[in-house]
Length: 260
Image 1: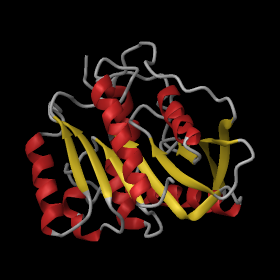
Image 2 (image 1 turned 90 degrees about the vertical axis):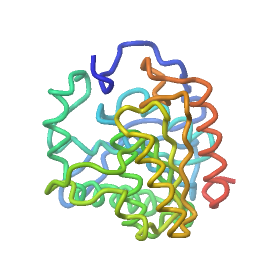
Image 3 (image 1 turned 135 degrees about the vertical axis):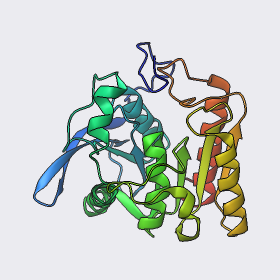
């Protein structure tokens, strides 16, 4: 079984929707719409915004639950389906089924879709434009680094085990490793020391590049954890490190004014 494959299991963490609006909405972009999971406190307005960027498996229950976790912190959380124009990955478990869809998604389209989510949240009055952050997992972790170079309104990001370097393609022309000097906001990297997809050597090199650039971004490495250690529906889940990393994320977002 691939390390990326979803393993059918009950989530270890379930966040209820009591007191929340939690549902899919359709957000317009360039004459069409994309489905976005949206969660925020009932009656809330002018809230901190957190963009939640998916793994390769789409906006499944775990990603929806993460949105509700942020909503319980007083945020509006948006998780857009960034693959939907190219196919529906929900329910797929085999990498050979998923990668042909995901590989078609160009970075520039992702940036546009995230911009549309930000605009929608501000225009509806749900989001405070001065308190916006982004987090993402695996595939979405890489996107966090990229979006931190793209949108100067984002105050901080948290990237969970996102690739830092990879093959250059037409759809992915640049990677985080080379973008250190272009970051507009501080990014907290959360990586596992046992991650066989992202070698610790590369993570250490990225950390050194950030330090050399005098960038406030930093990367925390959890020595006992592998890839996907926050994914509580998979065998990769490491409860102790997941809880610790979540606390670090919340503290990071408080430090940079997203959360109170």
